[in-house]
Image (cartoon, rainbow, N blue to C red):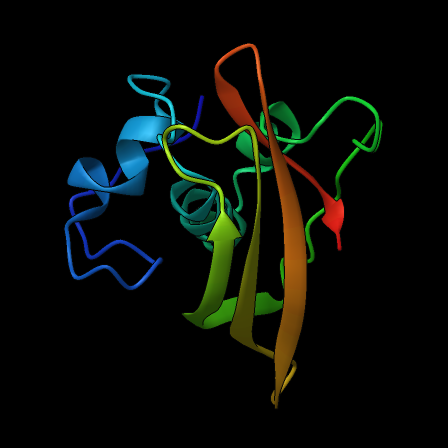
Length: 128
């Protein structure tokens, strides 16, 4: 799937990407929780990995094509709250803020995302 780096993981965990979200991007492991999937998806946005984003999007809501804005740089993620989404759950939500910059302007995206576990795999569904 995506490229794996030996730099800090964009998700803000403090770990090296290869040891954090990079395992999921490379297909070596599945995100064990909704929050882990949320973090890995943020990292995929930051790294421009549209294939991973599409692969982790529920087929009922997944777009046919995902064109990422190359001028947009993701600069930070903060997880605000999680509801369910654990290793024994089948649904969950993650509320987050993601900071970005684009063309000299900075911004913040805040979202409450809904996730489901389908056949043992966490998938992003949509904003709740």
